[in-house]
Image (cartoon, rainbow, N blue to C red; front, top):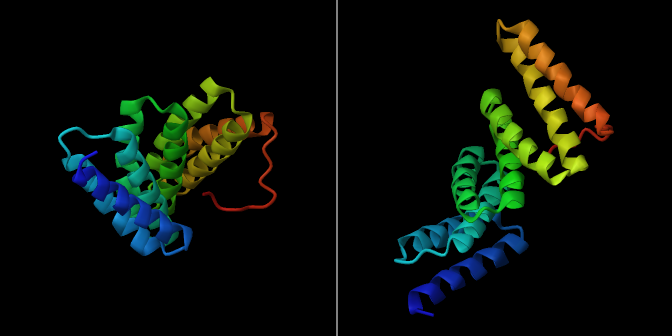
Length: 178
């Protein structure tokens, strides 16, 4: 365990303390610093980089900086794919879909949510299938407002709402995710 590795771990631990105390701005900055330091190592520990960037993305979302949440969410995706961490990848893609939707980038949101949905189908995760299908339906309905492909997008929206319904999804609380 080198001194550089110890410093990276110390940065990560400090960042987690800030995160636990709801100081997401400081947490995000330290997680990014730790992730970048990890990437500069001769032998990168991809799982550590994945964790640092994942929580940086979540932290940036919590302070309302969705552009940075997307940047570090996409970095998380890279490491989750490299490590074949399918559940973490699905969760991260789901979050990215939400971030993109909040930025008004519905096509990107749909793309990321569909990628997550595919993984949840593999895992037979009914709750996430239903929730994500509902979100995709909603995003397609938002495209109906801005596209000339009204028939096509409204049809896609209806299809995904039906999938959601078939998995007993109910959005009665109308809460935002994540």
